[in-house]
Image (tube, rainbow, N blue to C red; front, side, top):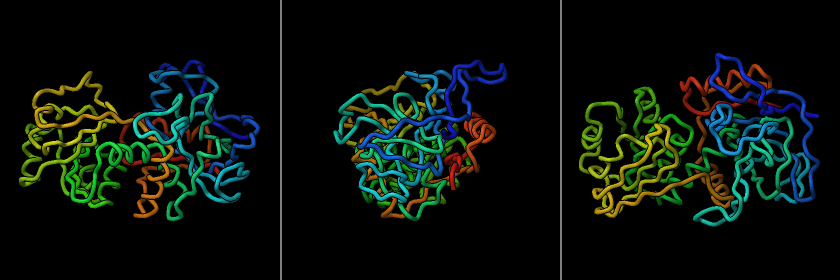
Length: 346
């Protein structure tokens, strides 16, 4: 038996917005098959997906699931994985997406909902093909926060938006995990990155990570401010996770043939106005969700090559009910900058 964070449909108290709750309790992991790897989890990270699950706003919610999709750990039994026992590894958070660049080949799922295992557990049994060596320069907390957001950002920036050295890239809603990785990845390959946020401190932090400029999207004339900062340049790509209010006016600052890649809709805008101003300039709008196992491997290689360090907002020690509840509260409040992690086993 090991400790794990288990999703339950027991009623929550009246002072929370949640339909479901999580109990940290003893759990009996499945017995590994020959093609599976047993991993002792060192650290697991939260995503806003975990909050959506608790609110009942996620498809296919199954009580008694071990929650969580991000983790780093030590191989206990290697199975058929191309790693060694005792080696530190990352786990691809997606299931049934091998290499197709357009969409998953199978019934795509994300870890943290049955029948897939979850990462908030002391021990985890996963398919051996989903296990990758962890870059040595990462701390436990940094490594734990990399997989899901890192994969989503990699696909949005490179597979979809085709960002390369010298490109001008706009990343909206800086501060979220995917947006921060998109910034770090684009800067690493030599792109010129600009950001948006309603928080001046987040824009300042983005500049410390390599952004060349940024605007508060709540300002009266945000597009005009971006034009001033660009000084005649135009964006080749937009990485958007917000369903941005700027969308309708983006053609003013986009190069012909620019690519807009949308991976989320945090503003719940209800729809994007893609009109003649966009398509007459051959601007492309692409949707992007997570990524394939091949893309995950390329993302890990990129992080290793450029020694990219994920931004961690807070790391708590120990898989306890108190630490789990505190972490969820941090995400609900929305004030964190970077990943929230629980370090489980040293």
